[in-house]
Image (tube, rainbow, N blue to C red):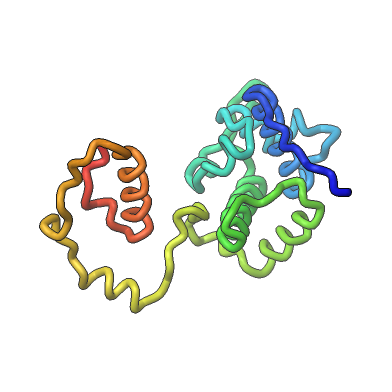
Length: 191
């Protein structure tokens, strides 16, 4: 006889606490922050100073410029985060987006194989000179597709106005997602 599994829904406060623990786990397991001294480590201090306290809500939305601008207090003075720590954070953020793009979904930072995968990525695939592309926005490098996109100029006359009030929100969301997927968001007014 099989057992039924039930999904446990976390309250917003529980989800926030879990997301904070995800960030701590990523910093300790992947970025090498010592667990015993994580509260005083420059990476943790700089992220906290910048308001980055959660993994999914804050960290994964950072950009390379955000990481380059990280600062923390040292001896009562605000100092920039050391370059080696910035490079580690940039590499981890790039790794997260790279793996999420490959898996078509977020990466589980609790996975015990993640540190080894990160080390391989950082040593073989990561290019610190490249911009970090969020996994949901990763674009194809297909030259034929790029050329086609340059040649095809959609016209507003090709699309009739949508006048039905029912289900408008659903249709609008699907339409905007389609436009974003085809790099055509410049054709509509976002308001």
